[in-house]
Image (tube, rainbow, N blue to C red; front, side, top):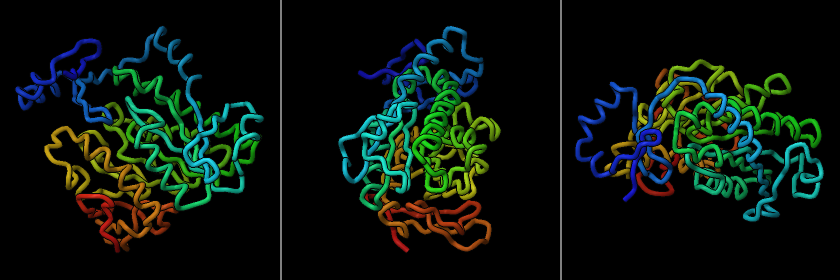
Length: 333
């Protein structure tokens, strides 16, 4: 039987749900919360704000070097080519083409570059557009079950992503004006902080946060999480707002799907795991159906479309979006 964890302490899953209402209240008082992984397995996590220890920082320093950057194009849509930071030859022998738009995509906690949060988006981009898709896999760090350690590692991961992007820009003609950065959950903050670092060398064209993780980020300022200031066009898709995802509007446009918190077709989704994953499912559909998700402004602005290869330039402020309960989810215009 799968077991949730409180740092290094496990507790049976059955016990968790037997006393869930009273337990949840106690957890919130004790600075704990419940966060399922991408497969929906719940873990009890401590919202620990203390800095990483010297030993944890040393481990993180080594693990940052395990982050991989894998290129997919129409020439190699499934068989990725590994690009090595500061290794020009590794890129020159690949199918990388600087004239193509480039999409950098990454995952969240306990996940990896082979998860649906990356592969659905990769496949949709390649179907819709002749482009470079680079999947960023930081799973050695992300698969640590101590959520607080992973969350506090996000700035270092973001810095490494920025270093790779700067290498590609300076040596291989990556163009910021043709670059989109996409991240799910904790990965949204990774991409936001990477884009923030890149501002001095050229603002990223588009930044997309797919239900950015809430625990340990909801009270941070723009220097510690994804934010509207980090790219030319920053869009946020909210699907488990106030649960696993942030409910605060932090993008230039924020699309709250079906109210932002609960998603149709996600039955018995008490913890929000299903709703959290819908963010990347909806977005992947929008790439090939750019007018599939019309948003209604909540502040009286003209309506705008959610997602797509190119974000709707007229989208400003918060929007409500309706979806269907089953794939392909898009109700259309």
